[in-house]
Image (cartoon, rainbow, N blue to C red; front, side, top):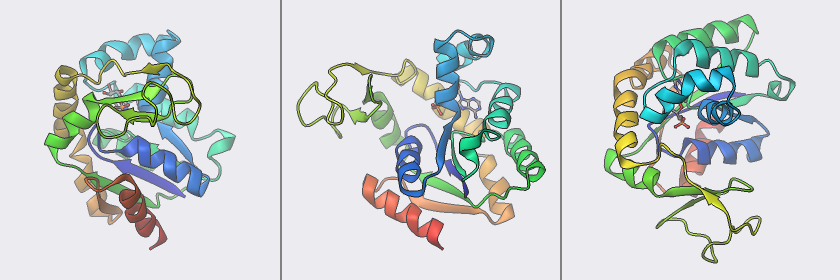
Length: 215
Ligand code: AMP
């Protein structure tokens, strides 16, 4: 099964992708995570992507299309995958169609997670993750049971994304409306676009996604 989770930054794509990964045995492919790893490792690709990521604008289509093209050919993608944060431009969507066709693969669902803009800035700027296991938390909505201690692994170290600040978030949202939202009609025209209420509680969103995938 091949799924695209679509929505603005803070819509909950990563959270839901991790749930689907566990429940359906699919692999989460987050271009944002892959790019952050490349930046941290100071690879040539990371160096080329860093300035755009720091400013909240999009990395070039060439770079992200190359990342996905290589990644979906790996063995762990054979059972299917969830695209989280890709495609983000119409050119990326078109390139994805070509890549899938070349491999004889079909896109099963494009799920748009709809969230009010006002809720996004709070979600994004309050979120942080465990530095050891990656479990996600939020300053007000999702605190660890014991303050400062990860519920899952007990670590006391946490990290925040550099671009999760109000200023950069504004640029990321602008990029979403300018470059990414135009991808929605692309999939609507193909009849693959479905919507879920991203404002609902995490479990409820997961249930809505399950219903879409079961249909
Ligand atoms: P994300 O983790 O999905 O919020 O992505 C973080 C940043 O990585 C974005 O603000 C972009 O700079 C870059 N990025 C991630 N995915 C893409 C993509 N598909 N196309 C272009 N830039 C991307």
